Length: 201
Image 1 (tube, one colour):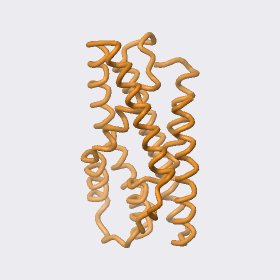
Image 2 (cartoon, rainbow, N blue to C red):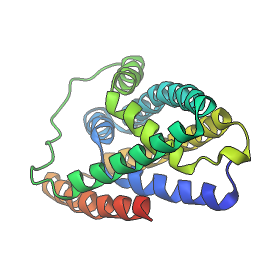
Image 3 (spheres, rainbow, N blue to C red):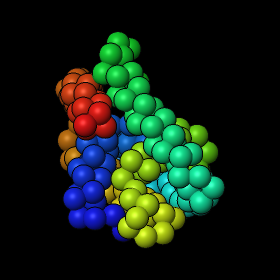
Image 4 (cartoon, helix red, strand yellow):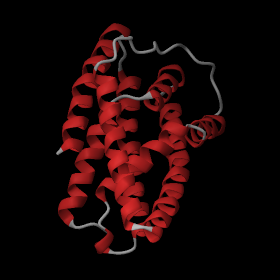
């Protein structure tokens, strides 16, 4: 694993990214609002399980790149940092309102878990994000790159489940459409700026 300083930096950056409400969070929150907290938590668990597929793929692919060429891995890190800055700026200056959370038809918990996993597995943006984000915190001199990437990915997924679960529990407790939408937009813009600053640093 990376050294303690790099690992703490990864955890801090991951939390900054995860606090921004994304489509996955909105999906889990919608389920929590329509079927209760349990349904929302199961949906969040499905989303995190699907993300593990992307973590494994990133670990295998990026470690193979490093074995081929350290320079190529450096280029991947540079492109990844540029992509993360682009995502932050895109969200920061976005003018369109967030999509409203509409009522959804009830499903069994098994179906909710499967739906959440499928949404994650077939979301190419998640794959691109992991390929861009994880290499920024890898130290090739600290051990096998694949193991580092896998460890960082598992930590990220665990943090994602924690933050998504928090949103789900809050949504299940109380919900006011106008205030939540405004809060999410404001938080999204502020935290996007923080993402850009943390990556640039």
